[in-house]
Image (cartoon, rainbow, N blue to C red; front, top):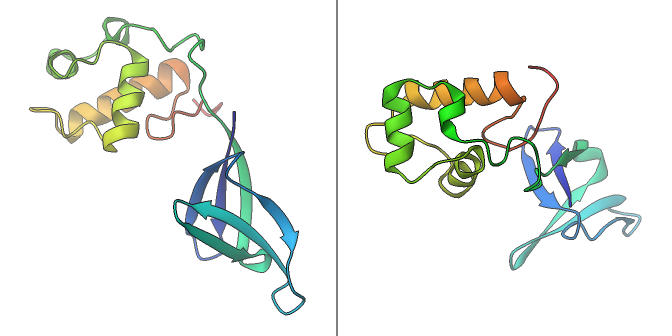
Length: 140
């Protein structure tokens, strides 16, 4: 599945999948070219000259090599490991799913910013994964 991030000149970012971006099309001459992006019941219309970039990102697939890696293999501190286990998080995919749903790991009891940074650092250094986007990057 294709996933895109549209970044405006002002720095706002909009995330959408390939089915959601309906088209890049020429609108009336007074508006010029615009992006039409459905967002729930609303539709974003963003003029082309206000767009800095549209980036295609990779959505991790369940068969990725890291998806079913147990958290035991991450060599985490006892506090981080215990917090994840207590929250029912057993694999790297579980971590990414939790962050996608809740936006962070710090909502887990006794799991503070230090633990979250530790987990994010391990995912980045071991698999090149950005914990917040689930994307694999090459800048490990």
